[in-house]
Length: 62
Image 1 (cartoon, rainbow, N blue to C red):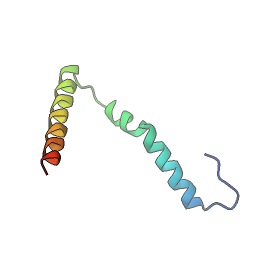
Image 2: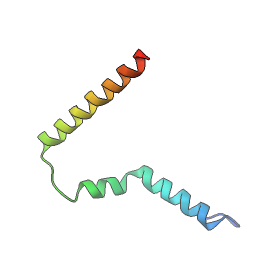
Image 3: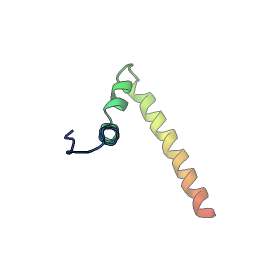
Image 4: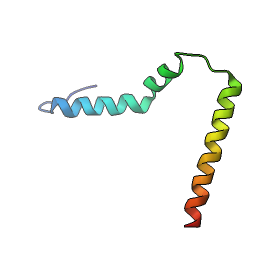
């Protein structure tokens, strides 16, 4: 991460953290710490999709 001349170190660090977070490296690292069966992952994804769909439906009703 190049730091511009005279740029605040805290601002550069904040940029770095934001960029690092967007890549999803830390999220992937945490997910790889343990194995989850594909069926469990599919079930979680399905439950999340139903939840999001319900939220969107409630938002439309307002």
